[in-house]
Image (cartoon, rainbow, N blue to C red; front, side, top):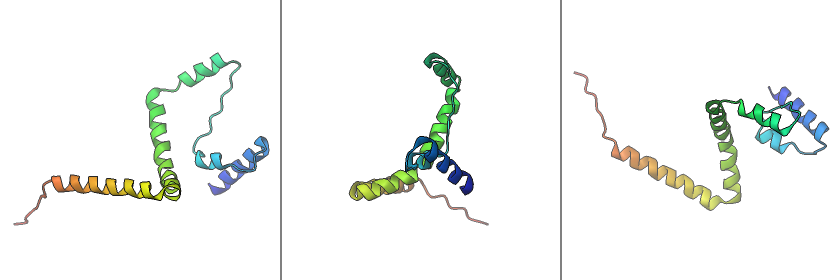
Length: 107
């Protein structure tokens, strides 16, 4: 798998002339190729994708992006990143405190 992505990045650098393939690394899960003769034909191809499938794939992409985004936020704005984590922790604690504990007694 690594060799495939390495080859893809090398190919992308060669055809685009860019020295960096950062965008390819971040969004490397998808590569969309369209063959269209006009903008209208391109729009028709895009509209053929079922909305449920589109939303599923967007969710998968967002979940894959989350660790990188957290790391980026932590490096660029550590105070707000830590505050978000503290808020999430507080919310989880309140949910856990509101749920009754269930004990099972084996007789």
